[in-house]
Length: 273
Image 1 (cartoon, rainbow, N blue to C red):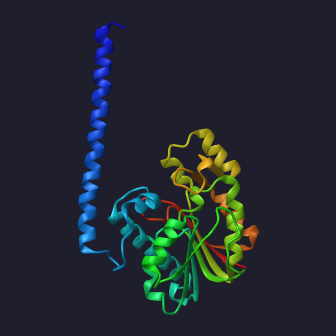
Image 2 (image 1 turned 90 degrees about the vertical axis):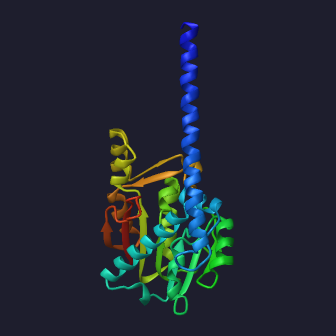
Image 3 (image 1 turned 45 degrees about the horizontal axis):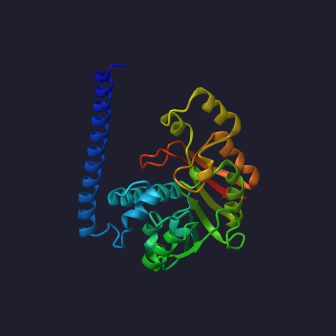
């Protein structure tokens, strides 16, 4: 290649890098402005807001508004689904948020705290400690290991929910954790799980071979060595999730794309039999 050609290519590459940096700085600046406004005005629920580094860890973004509204959306989604099936959230005497992070959803159950034993657990002690310090009047919190069991007796909770946790576990950890969550649900209690379903696979650009694998294997996971972090992404077929009934569950509701926070994860509600 002539010297002038190489120079032009280097200039183009340098300009592309410069524009990428400018875009990143603009995004960061806008986020800081938005966050400053939200932090000055206080949270929507009156409880403290996590620092940016914890937001980044649990939602992949430092945006305070998205943290709050996403939690509120899930609170409303869960409440509506339970009410539709004649088990309003107020009817439970014990609730577990498995993979609670820094309380994005759990904080919205504050109205239940005097009549319900609420627990949150997560494998990250930093997140759990933040919850204990800031949301301790709503719930109790525990650190769990990356693998089962949980430190709760069998049938301890009337309602267990796990939002966007199976979505970040390796293939080999799926069944053990689902079985463990089933164990801690009381007889006739409810278990709610969210997963990346078929529409998430389409949005993620699955190839024909990857879609075939999902249909045949039930679970397809990427970057499994990073299981438990947002880097690991797992996808579940409807057939796999319906097959969980073999663990002693009854499928009460299946809502494709039912998580209306932009992720379009599928919702599955089970009853322990």
